[in-house]
Length: 91
Image (cartoon, rainbow, N blue to C red):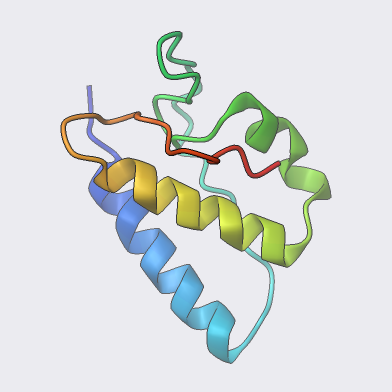
């Protein structure tokens, strides 16, 4: 299985920097690997919760950026590709 964590971390960094200077549309973190991990409750591809995935289309820009921040934290969690962070369900 491909490890999408480095790309997700880089995308989060780029989006969060860009949003600070010029707010605009926030792209979806979906990498077309739509498979939920039963243990963590996160998508194995994009590291979002089912609530984050389901609510994405209706989220405001700030909420989408908050999801990207959570994805970056989850991706950087030591020893786990899909470890949820406390308070991490940003729906």
